[in-house]
Length: 323
Image (cartoon, rainbow, N blue to C red; front, side):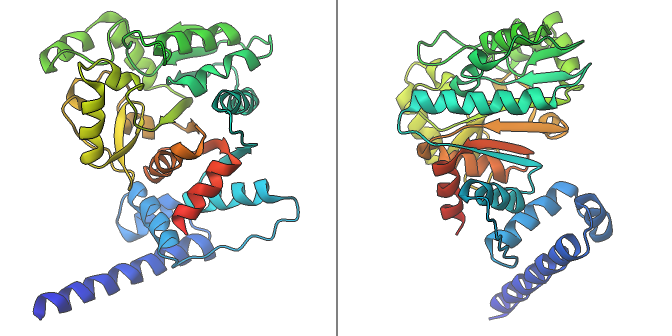
């Protein structure tokens, strides 16, 4: 009986906290950092609590938008996940056509944000490859492109991270940096040695200087490069799903709540660390297709993304999951 009373009191305290920070943010216009300083919690914790307030309907936002559905969906996603921007593209039942649409919108957004002397991080995936044909022949001054992971085994269904970063760098007329090491080391000792490689050390220095990062969000399948290297990809996929994974963000497996999961190979990965990515001023997530809706929602819940580019059907599916 006593334990139940304590549990109820904790729930009431949690609800009161959600109400308090929601008022501070939505009514008083305070920033996440200002709220964090006043409450005594981290900025990331405040972001997660504001998302929880939305999901538990402590806060409800109504949007009257005469422009159209896409704009309303963009506004709602921005409000729910505190995004700087959201771009909703037309949908398509043809996955290849959808990749092309997402790629075009991503290039339009990227080129509108590029400035001189920027350092741009590039992830990997078919969605990012679809950007390449849409770049206009315009060169930018003193741009550096850096791959956010090591290399991956040859896979006919997935691009290699180096190829993606290299193609973007050529289109932008940018300098290119990438680690000349595999993304998945054989073991922890091998990883430590590979991290000392000159190319890795140089790339890691640029990871700390990122102004903008482009990442795709993957669902879990045997075609995904991180599983392709294993002797039995299907068995590995089943294992990580059983452990709660719903998608991956730069080879970080995440659960439905946006929590990064540890697994048999996470300690062997060579890629930008999640916390380093979190410190990047602008992180753009590009992904679409209803089968990826759960993975995209999980990525949004990490608090890493500032911008989301996805298609209308997928965006609506994400909002339905929330509602």
